[in-house]
Image 1 (spheres, helix red, strand yellow):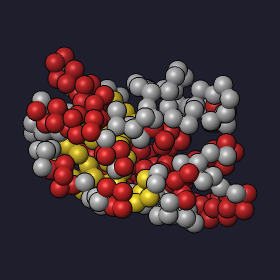
Image 2 (cartoon, one colour; image 1 turned 135 degrees about the vertical axis):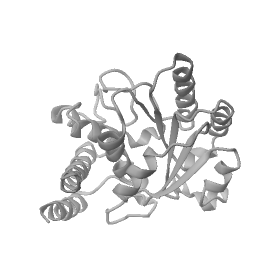
Image 3 (cartoon, rainbow, N blue to C red; image 1 turned 30 degrees about the vertical axis):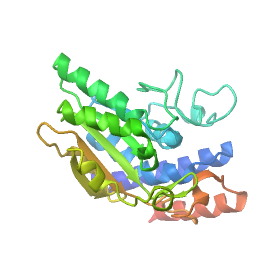
Image 4 (cartoon, rainbow, N blue to C red; image 1 turned 180 degrees about the horizontal axis):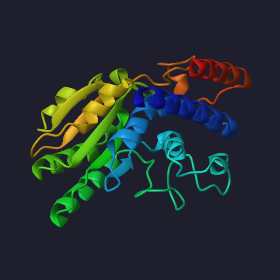
Length: 262
């Protein structure tokens, strides 16, 4: 049953994400689509009510809002205010009115430290919850991420799961061209964290990867993804910033609607 249900959920979420960004004339659609499969699987299939989630890659706020909408936590009317004046749903998550939001994010590199702090607090309190943190690969050029990883390994935070959306693109080009890195796995493994590599668009692989645990070590899940997955400009830099034109939106909406009908 879940196989059919999850496909319907995902197609509806993708259509709603597309509509939301088009109506707001907002960019960052590519980075939202590279992590939407992860976000939906995490919230619908993996996280328990007591678990915590931090969206470190705050520019993927749209994927978070649509996921919360799919859970019935954000109304359709509120989605229509996305990125508008006086909205409770800005382009980077902040402020009040967003269910389960623990921290404002958007300035990259802060999420892993916040998540590690929550995980350590849970250890001290003896509470049984897991902290999940979703990052972009580009933000691991920030020194704060590596400091957080060192801290997490030292404190044996096996209740911390960091997910890296490794789509290989960032604001100014390919990560490989900007900082000579196409795969973060060996660098992170050298710090002593447990590593799992998954296809970030394979739903069973996502669910399995996010539920693994390694005794006395934080888990870093490297999700290989495609920026703008499913769009006409998938895997291209233009999916990062540029909003859709009327013609592009209609074509993409029709394609997604056709996939949902199948």
